[in-house]
Image 1: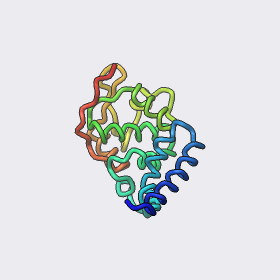
Image 2 (image 1 turned 180 degrees about the vertical axis):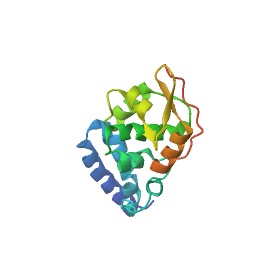
Image 3 (image 1 turned 90 degrees about the vertical axis):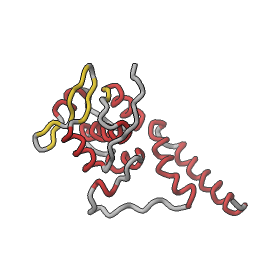
Length: 165
């Protein structure tokens, strides 16, 4: 990298730092991830055509883009978004209510108080999206997997989740 390019990146990094310093600490990491293309190229990614399907709008695996595109929904939709993020990483492995609460807190998403009831009552075309698997654990059903893939454009993850407390 030559001096001129380095100087430009340094200038953009200072701009981003000033902007992020003004933000709520819970969304700083997501904001920085969103601004990474600006740091390297000097431009932000253009917004996709709003008439396209959700699956085309959010590339699989990019949590900050998923939150940017879908994070302004109703509280129960935010729970589905968090489940989609889990599904993208860990597939159909059960997730805990505590994980959903922690993820909502760290990303600044609003979720309902009774997560258990929200997940038990979540339906698409009359079919359950999630099934309880034990004390405070839920996993997506086959219909739920299809819903998450179609709505959020995620793929079934293959990672093994870390053992929860």
